[in-house]
Amino acid sequence: MHNVAIIGAGIGAEHAAGYAALPQQYSIATICDLNEMRGLALAETHNANYETDFEAVLADPAIDIVDICLPPHLHFSTLTRVLEAGKIAICEKPLVSSLAEADALAETIRVTDGRVFPVFQYRYGLGTAQLGALIHAGLAGRCFAGTLETHWDRDAEYYAVDWRGTWAGEQGGAVLGHAIHIHDLLCAILGPVEHVYADLATRVNAIEVEDCAAITFCMAEGARVTSSVTLGAASNTSRMRLMFEGFTVTSDTAPYSLASKPWHFEARAPRRQAEIDAVLGQVPGQKDRFAGLFAAIADALGGDDARAVTFDDARRSVELVTAIYASARAGVPVKLPLAADHKLYHGWVPD
Image (cartoon, rainbow, N blue to C red):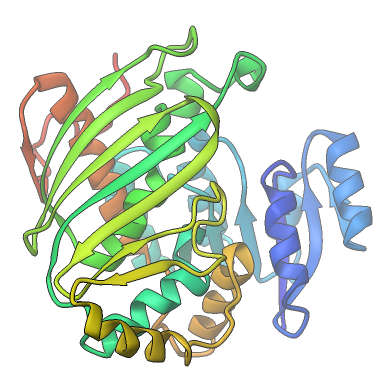
């Protein structure tokens, strides 16, 4: 049983529901938030302690996991304090705000012998399990091409929160705060990006950061994938569509739980559809979203790292975000990986 303190009761409420779905693995010990109305209400819902002092959380020997649900600009410093206190860290996206911070955090992990688990919940659910089963069965083959859609609706009310829509607080726009999940899922399925070309714009809201993007990924394994991003859609939908040798897969469109429901698989050769359907029929039910993520973390803490999101995954995500911003500003494709002398290694936030 792992005792968890959740720092931040905004998205932290969704995390709390994920832990509550796994009562054999987790107990929510403390909710820490400066907003008493929000934090106390969440603590009472989960029969947890309410705290406003982060240092008190770190000093509590009963807490072994600290789950960071704070604005992005606070992630690096908070992660560092959690590791130095000897706690396991779980942290919302983006893990940190630059490759320099990622590499500094890697050194802290090494020195403290700590564990950091990034939050990328899109990876978990029935849809991704189905695709994984078909790949394992040898029915997918190479991926030729694909499309990603992050078409969400974010208006002025959403950006009324003071840190949102700013470089200083949010550290980026739709590429960093919204599409980062589906981009991580793409890399979890197909592997790393070889080069990226991006065109970003601010068209929907009066904010500092981007809210529209058109991005092309050339994957290291050869597939060409486009990503369409906007915060000016009429509703909130996300979708992934990948064309493999053996079939075309189309995800569900739920914006926060892309893999919760079954995905659609269409064989290129109709006679192979029965084989695909037979494999799909054997895929068991799955924990999804945060419950799926936290179940994988519990497995990792028990010695089975197979399904957990790793620090290296999060670093690659930060590297991809860095390359996207670099490409958009230079107007040219950017090849990965990025070296320590890259001009955005220390961050993409404009001076």
